[in-house]
Image (cartoon, rainbow, N blue to C red; front, side):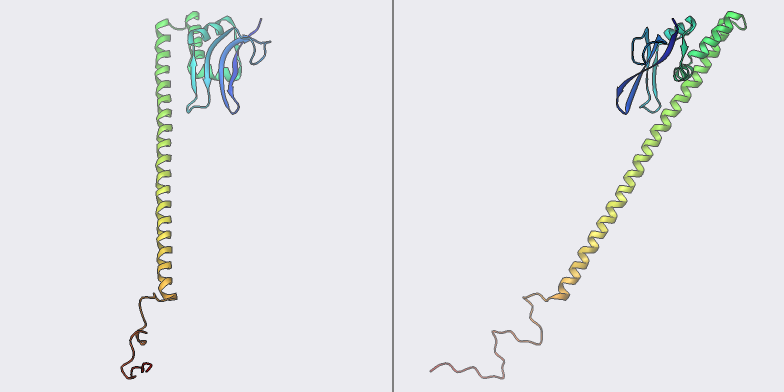
Length: 189
């Protein structure tokens, strides 16, 4: 029986979530599997990978062949490097302590790179939010200035079109008062 380490798709449409499994090569993509080794979520930045390191290493030692994507994930997490170093120890190229030292140095460097990616992603997100707030504030100010300009234009147009009713023009006398030149009209006798 040929065993493959591959991904099993879960999640919903447009939001994939994968299980990393050891399965018979003849089984369907989402069918029976021998063991669930871990999970892979590509929707996060950076992608979230949870892996049972010892189980993955055990399946590789038993002869399981990873698919190309699974191989990339195993390489990213250090499983393939650990297997390579264990092979060197078995052949006598270096000691177990040297292999452990090399692997720990690689893991430390890898975790530092991952932390930097996370910090860069968070910084980019914050700067995008800040820029969006600034653009929104500029837009609000522009709209407020336009509204004030429209109100001012309307206020200037209104007096020019018609004079208010309570103010009489200066050259005309009010209707209640009779002009001084004219004699008062005689009343009916």
